[in-house]
Length: 90
Image (cartoon, rainbow, N blue to C red; front, side, top):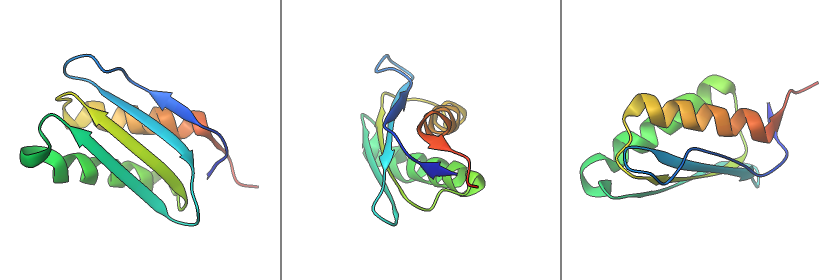
């Protein structure tokens, strides 16, 4: 899948995460902002990377603004944003 447009998923409500996806410059860039960054920042990044790898994205800018979301919520929001931003490869 190729990322061709800007897309978002989620909210900034408590226990959620706002994920923004934009076309990349030849690599995947992940930026994480979180109220629990010191404790769970690496877990959040790893959850996002897992979904990105499963979908096969090789170029994208992904920004996560976390408000204490569980891993399953992070993964769901990342997948939704990626699918909204992408188009299938031909």
